[in-house]
Length: 212
Image (cartoon, rainbow, N blue to C red; front, side, top):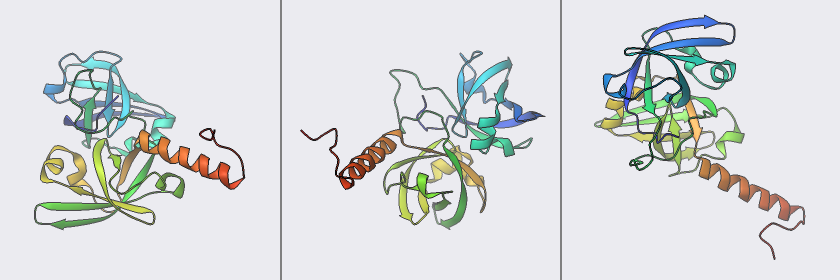
């Protein structure tokens, strides 16, 4: 489990490319190393990966076909930066929202509006099936960052970024057309799916689980 509060930015220092498989080695920030063990979960741009080797600050992770298909991690090259969050701990403060680290899809940066001390990024979603979970003022994870949805227009939505978010994450480096990892809020997904099932049942003249 993760919270969407990015704890550091790591640099990709080694890539071993194979068919439908990749091994990444990142240079982990020193403050995130204590207690890190083999098998631990670490989110890279919001995608939960498992530690497979430790060599000082050089930490190794394996990426299988599903990860490469669903995320932007397969497009990374040496020197690229990734947002890092270690798994959440019980009794710790949750400053963002509860996340699984399971990226549902990638989306494209469609527009960037910059004004003094503010930045607004518009994201274009790939299809309507995912877009129905994007609600104004709802939660969204973009490259592992817990954010609040500002506006929703057709198949696009925007988020508003404060200087602290730009400083502590990779969003300040994003440009038009870049791909970002998307994880929708699980509670929003459950609510939307439930309402859709109830409405579909009523439209067919059937009963619902809530009718007595």
